[in-house]
Amino acid sequence: MEKRAVIKIISNASPEDDDIIEVISPGKYIKTEEGYKAIYEETELSGMDGTTTTLTINDGHVILEREGTTSTKMVFDTEEPCVSLYNTPYGMLELTISTEKL
Image 1 (tube, rainbow, N blue to C red):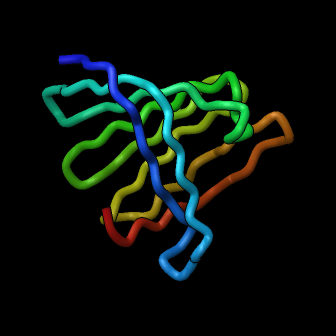
Image 2 (cartoon, rainbow, N blue to C red):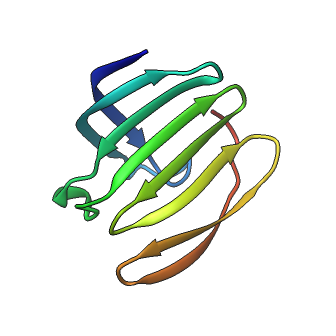
Image 3 (cartoon, rainbow, N blue to C red):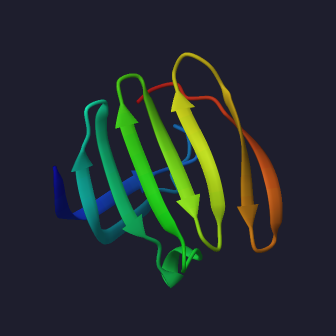
């Protein structure tokens, strides 16, 4: 099942961080056998214009994938940390993601 949707993402880098980032974009919402997907296009405001973001939400973990001017695959899993490469127009970063709560 696929539907058009308004995707709202609210995030911060750490629970102690008061600097909250909020993104609202038109996109689509897909119900899959394993869970859900939300797909939207990044904007110039986010600094990632030309990038498609896909959030895959399943039991116990969330996967964030970006393809375009910025590319990455990040796995947010409360069971174990994940190492991810984040490729931007300015260079590549290696990130370790430790998820406390989903």
